[in-house]
Image 1 (tube, helix red, strand yellow):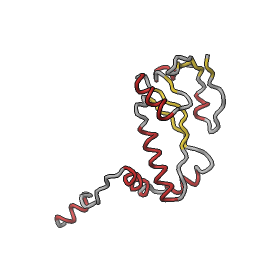
Image 2: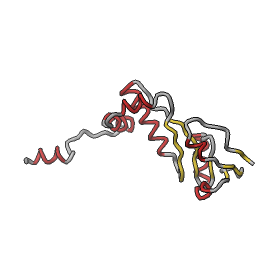
Image 3: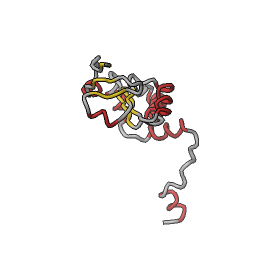
Image 4: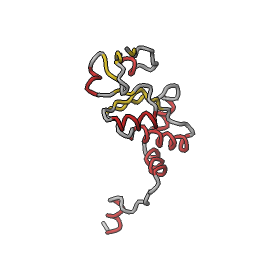
Length: 143
């Protein structure tokens, strides 16, 4: 194998991608059966909950993937933000300001209980089936 063939095999001859939108377009274009997945999911959103949410990078990435799928296949990945959970107050503020989740929990350790506190101090009854079912019900009750 020649030196140039080894570079190509190692991926070193690939073009440089420096723009995030182009990166996600390239990524989405290489996912097998992504178009089929979008067709199957066309009637419902991909439901996403984040824990130790920080800057909500999964939601930011999914938004860029949705932009890419729209350009590639004419169908945008539909994402529903179900909840976030973050213990750091300054990160909670960032999440609320930039993403406005339906509910923002304070501490991941409380999510295993029947009740958990929101970032605003409200005690909330949890029905995890609410978050997992395809149709959201009003079974989160604030005390």
